[in-house]
Length: 160
Ligand SMILES: [Zn+2]
Image (cartoon, rainbow, N blue to C red):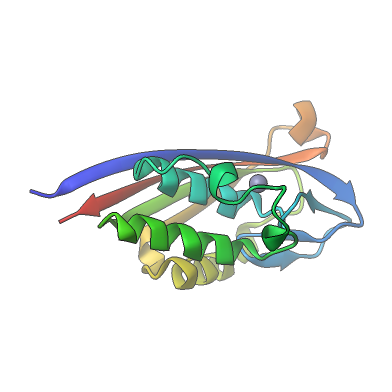
């Protein structure tokens, strides 16, 4: 039997007024958006960290420093492609990804199918192996005040 490993990822970004909001590769229509060095795609960053963690390849900040101009404003789908290449170099393939986004607004459920399409393409896996879920924070804390957005992800990788 091959080796199976699990990984966990977490990310958080500030929401700023009149800033673009990219989530799961989809540009959301909203009065505020996630702010950061790349496109601040909190969902893809959590997924990247879960994959890197599973393969014991440190974290997203190690591979894509926010002091490196190569990653300034870059689509996080490109970062995901890099991460998938790194785990493939170690002989792993992705089993599945399960992710959770926590934000108050906008509603992201209508956009989840499109997110899955982008993620499946960037990671070269089937949409069936990607789960994206969403919840609010019941109006509590910084998420409830719409000051930030959080994402969690777990993934399973395997080596034959
Ligand atoms: Zn991030």
